[in-house]
Image (cartoon, rainbow over all chains, first blue to last red; front, side):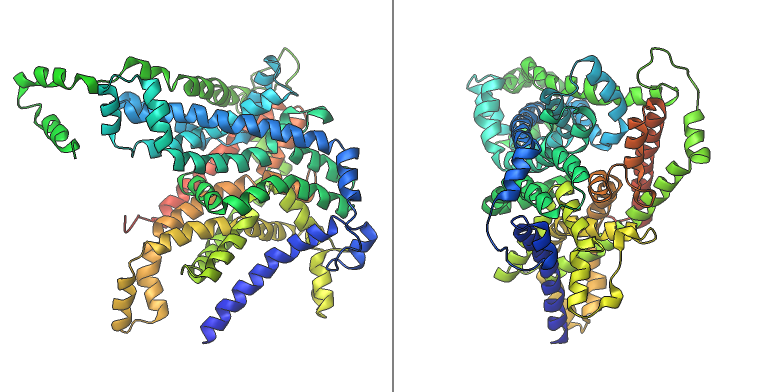
Length: 271
Length: 319
């Protein structure tokens, strides 16, 4: 009895610790600074989108939203494509070569982004990839390719070899087999990896901070960070920015919740 | 089903040497198509050129005094490393902070996520709802989480002090991040709020793989709850624990985004960790020195992860 009360108590308190700040941020994004400080828990007096308008209009956050959309929309499928090609080959090749390719690609998981950021910055400078979205996309792909290969390759290795053998007896080339057998059968692991990558790429901060100089090329997290510097305690404005930055992921989470959990824990348990 | 004849013939192959040729030719449709070697090429090329090569290059930069712009630079041997450990109090401060932060977060997050998981193992409607809620913060961006908590901790207008004031606990009100002795602890709390739900899910998967009969048997033997936890639950979740500990370690070493968001850029010294220090050194155009720091950073993560494996000796069970 006592145990059950303690259990319920702890769960309820933690639920409150998650819900209350998020609600306050949601309400606060519609308030004025004065109104927020007068009563953080009260409902906003009006649902005026003034803060949102100011965020989007005043600080290039609107364009940074679209930059984030472009970067994520290209980075995620590109990473999945390259990783699934490699994973597919690794699952079909045999012996040392397969092991060596897989090992080489997956080893990158051990390299934290901070470890090679200086040489990468220099290299990007030489290749003209600084201050543009192409560079960001490339950096995203490189940094997440190892774990994507690990997830997809690991899954594809569990697919029964006979399926491949049957299709090659039918005279199907490796490309056809990849498209019509390996990819459809790997759908669960691709979905998991896709969501994992979506969260990482959408929220990425270090690379934009390193590579982007002009405000027009900022992604959302970077725009938010610089925004915070300029409006130290204008919390309502910050909150509107936070909501805008979180909205796509939150909406996706509400609908695809189970896949999110599967994807992000696949990253955790295999990373 | 067809796999059995195949594997059997493979196993037999070495003794029946004369038959091998014929067998192989008959099995030729399964031979690897050379075109398959092209498939991993793009990934291998990208990783080699943009990940492995720059990482190796970091080792080269690390022994120079290069400022990133001038054409000329000198090789200075291990000077950068010596400087980091002996002459640079900013670096040693960041290193100490980082190790403290990792230790705090690993202990708190592992314990807390296990407690949550134990409370929510059963697949009831309420559990599933709470799991979804507790997992939710994980999907937010670190910058968003940082701003939310910056507001919670704000000494004048913040949520924490407002709540304490409302319930009459004014005495407990604090300046949180403004207090240099405590700031790191409060960021650790934020980090746990951010990721405990993710680790909880890893634990739930581990817990649900434990056969229920074990608990029934233990109960019949008169084992108490704590006894059951010690001799059934804990050994069984050992693999999950090693995942949680390893992942949390790397995650808290890389709390870069959270620190920058909550403490500003550059953070004050009580919140400076290795990744933010490396970034500041880099932004200060000390490329050679920043590269040396980043190598220390990488070695640190490897060392701590290795130490944990040795100390915890968590051998997988039930797999």
